[in-house]
Length: 187
Image (cartoon, rainbow, N blue to C red; front, side, top):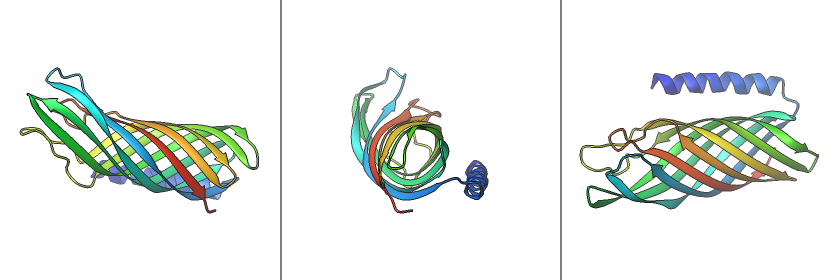
């Protein structure tokens, strides 16, 4: 819990600093589809397949060519796998807090091409089902890589989020989520 408070405090300082010095400020909503899997190196886990989910959230983008973009998203995804000859389907319901820094490769009034990356904090709202003797952590830290286009007030993003820590220590599972989203800037 101390880790979460630390990251929230750091994020608040960065956002407030950037808002004061902002050359531009965009705020908006976004929604899209997730394709998630649980990667593992454990031989006892096989036949892994991802299940589609969704996400919806808010974002703030501040800066000009170089920018800072924190988000708050509700996200779902699932994964089906076999462990010790039994099939399990784990469903995740999470709050995600990515905090990305990025660069606008093309920065025109009504058209932007941008790339960004940063940490991604994930908090499971409900414990996913897991095999007996194993469990998924409530909190996980990942890294996110994002590519996006802005056309007028509309935003389009493709993103990959990779769990840096083992979400299930006993099964050595790390989440990987590919997401596509559409957003609208209302400010």
